[in-house]
Image 1 (spheres, helix red, strand yellow):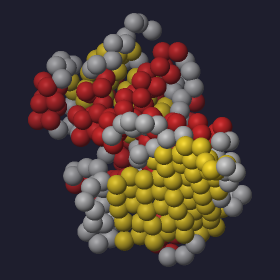
Image 2 (cartoon, rainbow, N blue to C red):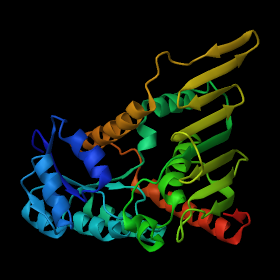
Image 3 (tube, one colour):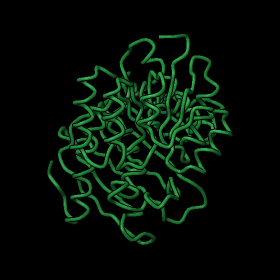
Image 4 (cartoon, helix red, strand yellow):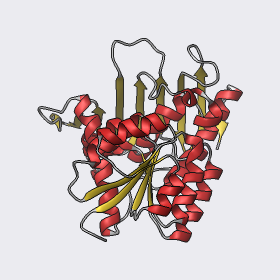
Length: 334
């Protein structure tokens, strides 16, 4: 591999414009070789803004014409599978924005293609890469909090995209559960070490939307009796975006956003809270910066990926049960 990892980007929507391109253009070991976008006006304007000369309306032409080490897929969810399969056939490493696909069957096809091509596939679960999330994970792993038995989490914010496809279930895979729920559940299960879920009970609502849910609350029980309680919404009234997560252990408790952590002692408690915690905007930006740096490093050093396609396959199977519980309005046993 050359001194710079050569990247192609498919899809120039909000996440590419606000996150991928601004961060990647500043990394010294990365070269954005080409971009692809079916919207011609967007292709021209975004490429001009970031001074990218190799631009394509058809990503297949980009794959055939450019020398690339890896491709980032940031297109509507229903297009991920086909684009991924073509990129892997062209022997490119992949970073796919979440959700990886509209269902676990499509994710399984991507896994098979990645194994055949012997290429890395990472899925964009950026909450794992927040500095405060990583510190909380270290506390959980170290045993300082004891055995984690309860995780309570939630995210209330406006929907992540205003594009029409985003509210079309066939194209997006779902509503706020697929947008925000997948991220908070991934993080909660990450803290548990991805233990197996025993049952799920979820209620969803569609007050502001027609074809997908805009709010959901749920309870997941693990096989060893730990519990995850979550709520996500685009529509619940709030003065500001609210992302929170608390993990309860037999010896202590830790909270996210801001990070606060305590361990109970006979004489009182130990406070692990860091002074001068970064604000939410910086943590959000840093999560994507860490994620992209990790992806590039994994390619350059041939090291293991965090947030693998295999983990996302399991998450898509879990989401299917989440939606099943919400549709049936009863607890579903896994």
